[in-house]
Length: 126
Image (cartoon, rainbow, N blue to C red):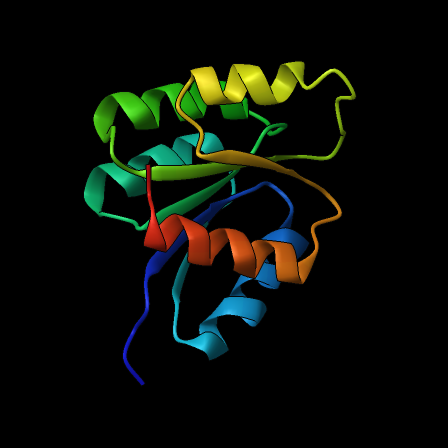
């Protein structure tokens, strides 16, 4: 099976990192995981990723700060940010997009939504 894409998941929750691996690796994606923003930034420095999933709330460094650094290093990388709380005013989404996020999704994440976003991002990354 041909490898489809390299995906990095930056989240402090082991369950979320495992979810992405269990969901995407059988479909041919290479899934890499970082347990916090600092580790994620180091991985982005060393490798190219087609898509990065980034949690907002993490220890050591929050998602928006990580997003800003990633976009400064590699402006063309697709970063999908996710949060555990939905903002009815969409202020979070606006701020994330201003910082360069491709889109925002909310936990609990729907498997079909994840797959749909990956397909759209790979077809049209900007």
